[in-house]
Every structure is written in C-alpha cells, then in structure tokens.
Image (spheres, rainbow, N blue to C red):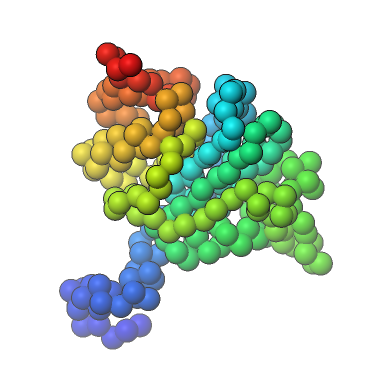
Length: 227
C-alpha cells in the first residue's frame, strides 16, 4: 500500500511514523476472543469475590490483554451479578489501539454475543433498532477504564490489583520473557490477590510469591520468611 521496496524500508517507515506503527502492530497482533471465554475463570472469580472483598474498601481488576473487550465486559458482568458490597473497577489494556477503541465502544453484532446468557444480555446490553447489534449499558461502563499498554514496557499503574487476567498472551513470548512478565504481575498483586492465565499456559519454574489455587489460577502470597 505504501510502495515500500523491502521489509527493511517499510520497518524504517513504521518506526518513524506513529500512525503507521499503530497499523503495523494491529496487523501483527492476534485478537481472537469471546465473551466468557474459558468460563471456569469467571466461575472462580465469582467464588473468590467474598474473600477478595472481605474487610476491604474496594475491588480492582486488570484485564491485561483485553483485545476487543469481551474479556473485561465479561469480568464486569460477573462482578455486577455478584453484587459486591464494595466499589469496584476494571482496568482494560491492550497494545493494539484499534481493538482498544472497539473495546471501549462496547458495541457488538448480536452473533458475537451468543455466549452471553439471555438474562445477562437483557440486563447489561441494549439493542439497536435493527436488533442486529448490542451495546453495553452505562451500568457497566461506569466501572471500566481503558488504556494502551505494552506488557514489555514500563507499566504506569501505581496501585495493586486484587485480580489480574493475563490469558492467551504468554504463549506468544519466549520462556524468559514469560517468566519476567509473570513475576512483574505477581508484584502488581496485593497479597491474597489472584492471577489467571490461559488454559494452555503454565508457570515456568516456581515463583515464591505465587501458589496454585485453581485451574491456571494462582494466589499471591508472602514469600517464606517475610513478615
């Protein structure tokens, strides 16, 4: 499209132009997702909510590779349905600005929402006049925050999370990078918080601050000897 004579020439152009770099990243990233994908994680989240919110004044969840938004909106529906007694928020990030814009919009063809139950669809989505598309209601929107983020670069968040979803992302990294990202995420969790990984992902080597607490689900603990 740009008339570049070689891959090297195009890469040089993408590095110099922010708009082309955004398109380049979007073309390379994989954005396969669905509402309530790998449902056991949402079931686990619902079961863990009383423990995660006990004695606390808020709940904070991070969807670290949100793609077009089905994951963070599924998280939001799960929490809203459980009716926690504390305020809650979900941070949704992705490296791809184009899918992030779609996630923030929260609008989908009805076919894309087929894995959402009828009562959740009725409660948390509104249909357009054609009944072919749905859009997330403001009841959920007020709890979600979106931002562009590269997992391999510095993270701007200063607070700790109660839950981090990092699913089906680590499979695209080499072993050393996977271990580094998981260690950083463990440090981004409060003690007692949980990290949820994809069904085909596993921790490489033991981390002293994480222990298994379910299917590809890990709880943040204090390392032995720490007070």
